[in-house]
Amino acid sequence: MEVDFRIRMNEKLYLRDPELSVLGKKIVKQGLELIIKLGFEDFTFKKLAIQIDTTEASIYRYFENKHRLLTYLMAWHWSYLEQKMVFYTNNIKEPELRLRKILELLAAPATEKSGSDFITERLTYDLVMSEGAKAYMTKHVNLDNRDRLFKPYKDLCGRFAAAILEYNPKYKFAHSLASTLLETAHSQKYFMHHLPSLTDFGMEKDDKKLLRFLEALLFDSIKPAIKK
Image 1 (cartoon, rainbow, N blue to C red):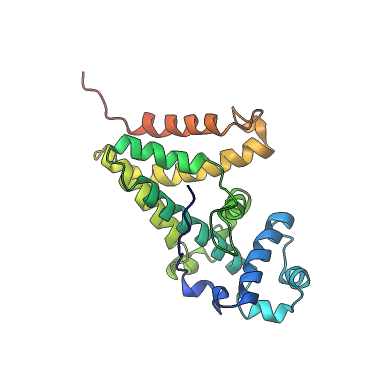
Image 2: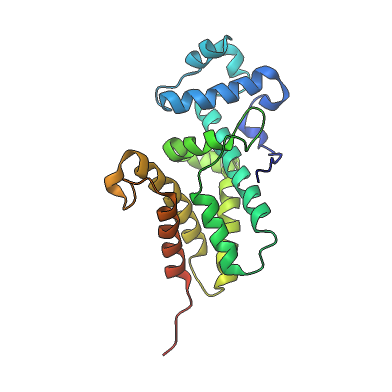
């Protein structure tokens, strides 16, 4: 079952809210598709303007630069994934089962149907896999962090870490493990499709093997020590 969520975006990510106009939605939708097609380095607002039959100046009225657009898309994805995590684990009482469901959500392929009328989880998932780190691996990361641009990612990691601590309250590295598993889920999926020799399941491109790997990393790390 796919569920649509209303995502509230940080106003500092944009100059004009793209959700409030046809052009704004087109900028986000076509911008997302073009970044995936060209790669972030080769993507420009000039190319996007040609794609959607508008002017560069019109795009700059919505986003300060292309990095802000990328960060907007990343923030949307992390917010969507957090809400999805809440929805699908809300009625699961057993901590271990809740963690397994979270890992399942991280490893499973996204679908075209989930998202909104102008942005889909499937495309933002592809973007996170290939370009995600570029949103925060910059010289101005501290300024962006001050403006809370990465709050959706931190909220997602925090919720995952809380689930880890429910399973083992004595585990000391819950946030580090949560962020590591989030990054691993996407990097291993990327390697699976593009650099298969860096994985043990790349030839088959098997999401179930990826899930088993994530489960091994998680539960081998957090299982309570057995006193002898």
